[in-house]
Image (cartoon, rainbow, N blue to C red; front, side):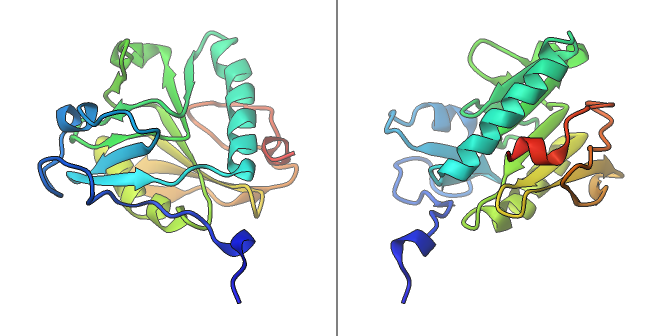
Length: 199
């Protein structure tokens, strides 16, 4: 028997939202959705409703924001944006990564309303209800947009898998845990141990 503690919210197609029909959504259609407290994303013209984050997710998101804020923003390397923050990717997808990093050389893509272009690093914090989508649909969208680095953080296993874009496809740099530090080209020499993001 499944208990409520074993049920995880899923990210689903938002077929109930009035608009142009699945496959035809644009950022302009997305921006016209009345505020209803839900998180939406567009990938390949399909509107999705994102699951509400749980406590483990939010705790990890706070730590990623804090540590990257110190080592990116305070170091003068760029800016860090936690969700919700709209990112309109060059191929027309609109996403809300859990954490988005834009380095100084690309700060021109940051507008008052959203990020319009390709960030340097995106991080998705996995949950049982979103892991498959983060590893397939969103990973493909980030690769198409040319995002140089994509981290998959699992707060349950307490692991981080950094992916780097090579020839239009992501290559895993490994799955890191515990006292390991991450091999990142976007945030080199990040002194934070993986376990600190989940402590």
